[in-house]
Image (cartoon, rainbow, N blue to C red; front, side, top):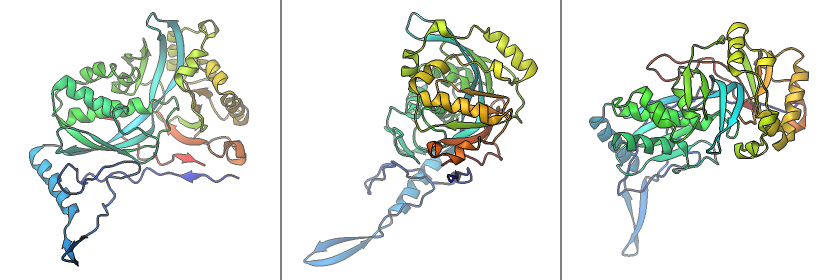
Length: 383
């Protein structure tokens, strides 16, 4: 049996960590796997030559960094903030028409789930640049990242000149159809607003966010929403599902590029189910296989045939263990609702030794509060 590794969410950031900024002392530039909780390992002595003799000059750059953080603390009501950035699944996803601008209109039930990233924000003395680090490689750390885009958008809309050190503890896989990047952007907008004393309303944050991503406005709902347009038209609804329903997410290492999926999409091959009827059925009877329609499954399966095979095997191996098995978004995550356990073949076969899988549940948030990581959210597994 292939071994699985348990990645627990216990290593959250310490709210008392220092924020960092520019100085004439040696620069600290976070990249790759640098953590805000990691103690900086600087040499305590510096050797220079003078008159052919070695002279030791003692200094403590870490102390200087802490002093910068203290200066920020004196001048700001909030200097550090750690937030949970949850992802979402599409319980159903109907593509209803092609738009004149080249995009497609959709109708979908979005719901936030308990799998998510942790983002640490620290107010920086710098008034010119954000600094982003991450715990995994491959995450862009410049303005290609939606976190930086969101902070730039907030400054543009409000005129606030706050800049930040940000560390992203990434647990949601990329290219998964789970909206992890969109959630990060929404979380960054929320954080920036907290640091500025909540200059903007949630409605304003939601409206602004559509300028940088279609899925971002959803995360300003209470956790469940009927979304239309490109996804940016969000109708907040009470969760039609029990928050106790378990699920398991399985994502192969291959991604399904959204652009490639839409290239293979054919409007005349979609389901004809009325999305409002699907929503009504879910509200009355919960999740069943027939309501979990995703019109992007057929084109995604053309782009990645192994994903179709994974779903088929998932259904067969479940033997009624799951209420429904379906793909989220444009892929490549397959969701099994009704059990937190992946099918046994995921453990047993070499073909699936590199898959990501995680248990999850549906979650919501309280008014005027951001999403909270569930205390029981401790599994995030991959071989």
